[in-house]
Length: 348
Ligand code: IPM
Ligand code: MN
Image (cartoon, rainbow, N blue to C red; front, top):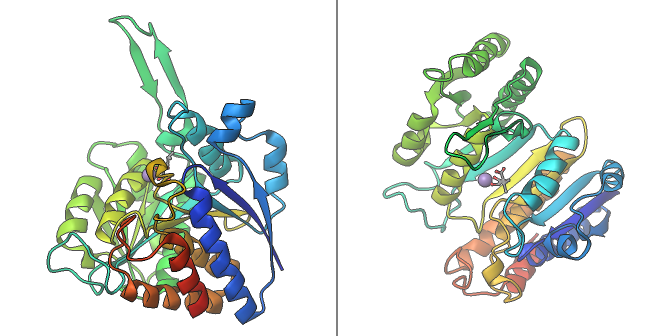
């Protein structure tokens, strides 16, 4: 029995999460897994009504769950930054979800903008550090609003944070058992302190994983290879900011935001799973958004919870559903949001 906290969030978040839950319930019936879903209303609407984003009491409560299933955070009437830092980043940080796991996998029958590349070429995962780097909100202004203004934003890299992320990535590479190659994506030629730490820890830990080939690519080159030779990658490990950027590129080459999922993972605590596409406010309530990203997030949730068989069944059913769809884009799928959810749920 799994207790799952559900935060539908903003825009199309609740709609796609509904389909993911439909699929989870169906997988649960088939594989005799029980779920208990508890719904929370954190998001833009609640903030506009009450002024609060995520009260501390909620954090204490959320720590009791087996996992958190998140739709999307981002509201057109709320100034950028408030909900992102107040809800999404606060959850990642306070629950110490130090890994952001983002598979970049092109499924058969999904269109990629890369010419002459197919599912055999685009299949890797990005392990993004999720609690440090440029995301720590340390910094400030001096002489704000004047011509002499100074703005700083510090990048935090701790030995502990870097090492646990790199270790997770080596383990993930071993578990995948594909090319047995782990690429560190950083910028050691410019960030000669921060990324020197990453490089040293990477090389040191790699000595314990002699079955894994350690590779290195600067982040700018990484974006180049992701477009030109995505087949080179197996697992990429990288910093918070770089991971944010390259996984949006990754989402595009795997067929778009409609199918890209991510997991915010605390291997020793509570993890949170989400479609990475955002709240897509213009599609809200129209039943045209693609729920597959949320469904793949649910699949990842099961996988991390140790329900690997059920996770595989969801993936296989989603792949079958994809073969019937016209496109991965909202409004062009040939089916409604709920129909896609029904199809995947029926097929598990
Ligand atoms: C993501 C998002 C977030 C991030 C934003 C919404 C804070 O872009 O999950 O990739 O930058 O991590
Ligand atoms: Mn992002």
